[in-house]
Length: 101
Image (cartoon, rainbow, N blue to C red; front, side, top):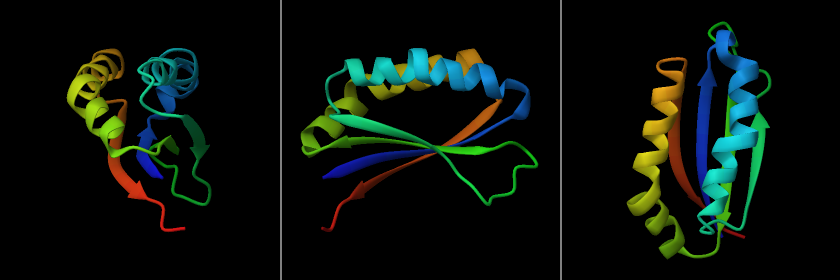
């Protein structure tokens, strides 16, 4: 199992609209690629939220080729859309995880 993990710190000023956009538009767009089997959306607790809360969105797949295809064919366009919509209202860090059990 591979997990495409995205950690995002979101500015308080855009928070409610950003969450709505994630759940109604952005996540459904990523899932519509059919390259991930499921996702989970979390809010980090016990962190400094002075500049805004941090969220983690995880997309799950059993095939490395699915992740590679997503990065190659979809990631750039979807990241660009997010930047156009929210500007510097968020910052994201992306990692790829592999399950060891």
